[in-house]
Length: 455
Image (cartoon, one colour):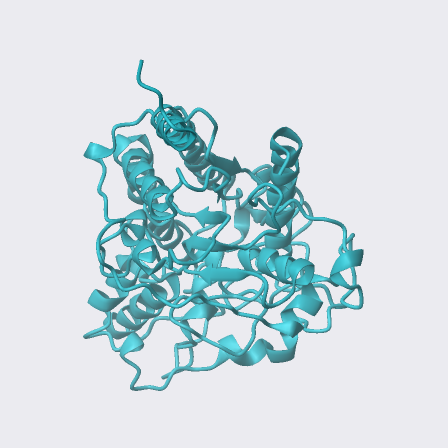
């Protein structure tokens, strides 16, 4: 009988464990992990002021004067018996945190400093120190699943620096694939005035996309590409936490039946049936994402991908709550942005966002291509950015009808509505307190995983 050395036996055992741990045939999925892509540098957005703010919580978060050793431990996913090393954030505007913690910038991806990935990053830095961890903030407003995939022109996965020791990923994706903006435009804001299309058509298009297997197939490819890029078989502790979306409305109140968020005079009313149908759409999207994740995990002996549903945290904090006449710009308890609305980070925080609140109220120049009705449409549609698309559609509507009146009844004056894209794009996205609620639910999931897996 031929004897094997201990090294050979260990090698055979390792190969067998890999072969049995993963039971999916990857030949039908797009693979780019081995291609020679130039990797982007690791982002280290260390912002002491943001960290101080994250540690000033009206509920239970510690103050910035506490040292990392005195902080309550946070169950960051990590290699067993090691300190957490870092993570990546991918996805759309919900992950980018558009509009949160206004910091005077207007970057192409509309990154906010109070989006839940940034809040988690700040907690990680407070726990481990600014130079002990890495953070790749790849989320970008307007992104679809196709935009994430390797090989696309703006691929987030191709930007992922695989030389980094990444322990986990955060992901929010799907809303742009399933027509959120088209619904907002046709049913709520009517940015393109009479040319915005019908609400019923937009809702039916979204419902058809949700019912189609295409979304689930593409989401599966994106998640598998992320796992391939990190070489999951060599990092069995690596997990992906996927967040869903929250319902926008209290659909039962009477006060909103005669209210409107429309940007033009006599915009569409927020009737109960519309609110109910839009809420059902959000729940359907969440369910679709969860089913996609379950399907992926069925191919592993141990789940790799987890879904976080923070919708219930928004109870009492949606639009059209009892006694609220919308649009109510003074209500901090609403956890979604209105067009041009302020953020709602707690006033006690030292870097409260209102310190630079005017940054997304800056007017674009009259020669800006974003509001040139003759050339803006194609690049706006390609960007997928809600704010860019809204600006272009309003400019085109004003050109088609020079007598068009804004919501309060005045005729639109030249350059009177052309704010920077975040002003419009952040609408119906979570404000800072909404992102804090999402972070809370992420930590609850990780606590459960820590108890089950012992990391």
